[in-house]
Length: 298
Length: 292
Image (spheres, rainbow over the protein chains, first blue to last red):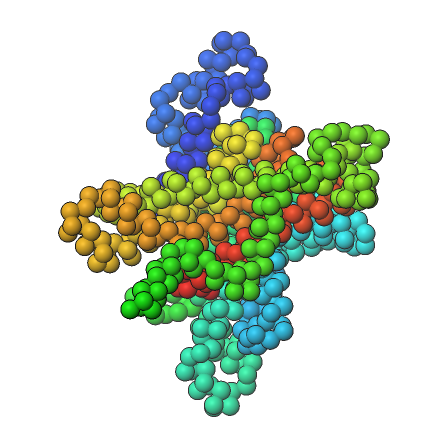
């Protein structure tokens, strides 16, 4: 019930971008110059700008449902084509970096919960607070400086081979490793106190099986929730990371579109990101039921 | 008798914000945090006294000079002294991030109290809209607002302030709901106090420490977001000395002048780290239930 309402809300917000922008859309389209009057009339009619706002919304929606998000002001190409060309790259980067940070973050979190207050724990917690405090673009630039400029291991920027992917994926990953490690640690500490852990240990179950098979399974729910939320964050951070690495994804496209005041493109990008974020989190909700059947029966 | 009174006084002190604030100094992370934050705020306030050069004076003869005794942090592509730029940048960054948080807080407090205190349809409407707004990743929300308003520092501050509104509204609504059911509100009402009086005299003072915790945890996020917007060219514009914007040119000269990257980057990191540590400490002290 809530999901369709939410999707409608998203389209209203996205639609209102163009309505709320101060100034005449035609002038924005022609970069401040005014074309002849009949051209203006023609464009107004073509884009439905002469109709009332709510009619414009329905026109926008009708188009969006058919996969037509309009034409970019700048390149005159279809917005859907522009996005389709770029979105897979952003998604690819987000998935790879989420995979890195999930594996790294869960492992670091489990070990630092198991060895609470040890040197390793202190190190991981120290690292994680530094990771949260580091602006991703600074980290990205530092990695470029060290690994591309000084050592020459990876290309400075661009897209193409897997070597282009390494630095941006690590850059995006570090913040998430930090966040996931913190949550894993606290969730694990909570679980390790419970009786079933003591039972398992007293039965003589090996320690790594207690940790990874028994405890982690019960501690995983907050981590999965977090991963869903971080995915949205990854799509958002794409705007910054892709600018640093000139990664030709949707974020770089978005930054250029905002700077050029290319609103149909901005609308399309925001719509795609918001909907993917909602879908991912809905998917996470569904996963809960499989991970913890008690939730399904509630 | 005397002793009892003194104990009471002490207890009273403990309940107020500043009475408890002393605990921050005993909290290891909190102490480091407060030193870092204090250091940055000190530099921001007194930047004209420490800055050895005018941060905007160009000197093409001395462009891209590495750090030296004359230019502690080196010079940029226009030969401007980076140390002075960063000092003055502290003002911009601290001022703008705090303004953003105040915008979120002001609107969030208003909506949160209406939703939590009065309840009913208003609550349902506000809560639903805020939940829906949170379905946009926060940076995207800020970008949407910037794209509508246009890219400059003022608009970035407004945008970042507005994207924080749902977070503050939801948090404050939750706190208000907790307080509403405690007897003292009932008591005040029985004494004939009007809603306005209850809200300002009783409710807000009682949720203020939780709000301060949230503010201190939001500031670092906001600093990062504003710096990020500055870096991608959608926040502060030249010649505004915002730290994120200072880093824009560092990318082009990364092989020639890495100091253009390291010093502003370090400045952002120190202030974010300071506020993160301080925020964690305040959370541990005032709101142990939020502890991770």
